[in-house]
Image (cartoon, rainbow, N blue to C red):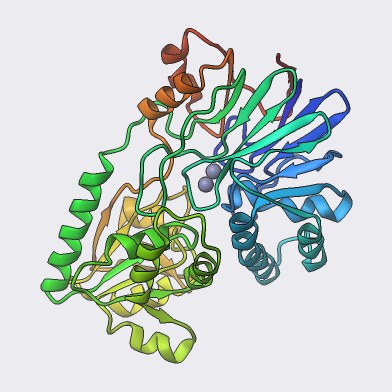
Length: 408
Ligand SMILES: [Zn+2]
Ligand SMILES: [Zn+2]
């Protein structure tokens, strides 16, 4: 089998993996690096099927580009397909607003959906010479590892999480000959998730008991819903604002992907859903506001921080990775961020809670040993070599973007 990364090999973002066996060509993911302006993978190469592991933009953000010039069957779970649509439309809006060159348009997004073939975990189907089996990747609801079976079996994880969370059961290794696995946290382990959640709940209570409010700048997909569940049984008023609302509605209407749909529904019913400007003015009366964007580069979060910036009883709690040159990173490192072009230094407390949904180093190694492949291909990481000493019994490949190589 020939493999070529059009993006995302030695970097976190714009993942695009092309695989070719006999006459069958497939692509797994076609993402973006959401910088300003965004960075795209190498131009689309013709394939028969495009497989999407999950709806984060670093995996899905360039998909419509594909349909601008090419056609392919588009395979994704219903949850993934439903969740990506508002994000792609938002990317279009941002591109127009910022004056970036148009790389895809609304028609391309429609074309993507016309090509959709919905898939289900554990139900195999054929694409050319491959019998493909989707499995849960445990990362966000709907996230999928694809196993491509021919004379050999190849498992592609996308983003991977093996711990149980409020939303999902962790991913389980699937025995395969070749493994293409993400390595975002190579060399790093996470603090115990249970302990992080305990600390987060304790700090929310402290801030609220002391008369302050907690702002959670949060990604729309997955994290918004998980935070609502983590805080559900606490005696605090919770508002959800921004794109997280639309995604939450999609989760409500796409059952079958959550560990407990009943608990999820109960948690969401406890929250105040902020829709529209008038509701936003009152939303500040809540104790906790979960809102986009997760890296604070736009969205309603900036309005809330602007209102509370002089209040040292209130707090900003970040729970996700903050990319360099974002407001979130600047706030963590320097205590400053830009709101409407002005540099602001909020007096609010600020704290980071690691709720990452990527397997840390030791859990990646455990997962890889569970798959027990002959060949491991590491991607989606900047420090992949940190895994080498723990994988000495396997053939390990660290591909680079644009380089074509053969395995199996
Ligand atoms: Zn992801
Ligand atoms: Zn990713």
